[in-house]
Length: 247
Image (tube, rainbow, N blue to C red; front, side, top):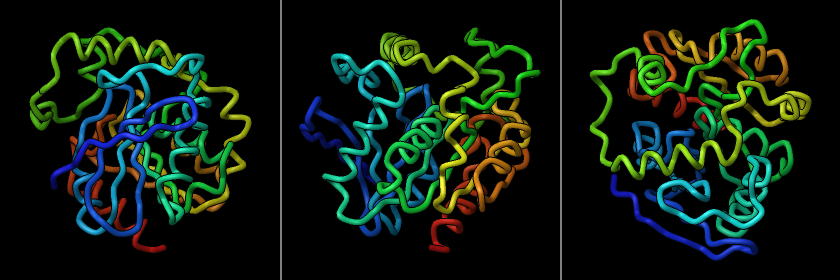
């Protein structure tokens, strides 16, 4: 499926996104590594309009003056959804994208119909070992099947720019206490997806959110680490599609 780059001028910034497909809208929010179009987005685009917005500062896009936190980005994306989506979209987020999606629905519950949180960051158990961002360790923890990792098409300079954006928004904090205090407010149908071998967002985090979000459903993808849809693309896509099709 061919995704097209688009942009739109909002109140504070020009937002860039990629889009493919037609039908009910799905907004998919990228992880801290940046935007990479993977199995779930391609599967969704077979029968839906899939929108992949880029967090400002990522993928060679400019930062927004005064926008330094994930909640502020959530406000920007909510503004974008109200302007760009005549129908209330479903929202899928992975890792940092799941944290962003959670903030968006907490602050703007009207902009999300159904929610999928894949390996959501910000809820690491207090007794878990400290997270490592040393590149070799991070890469080892990202994949249960590194041989399935697609070739990297971005330059070292582009990857470093994405890492600077990650630091700019303070996403490295393993616990988002402010979000944790509000996560129980999520009332829309919610699917929590964990990797059975994920040590960065361990199963305890998924179980914790399942208890906090009333009526949520929690599933685990066997033989998958943090990059769930790279390790197990077909199984992950099938679970997400089944959940959204139940609407």
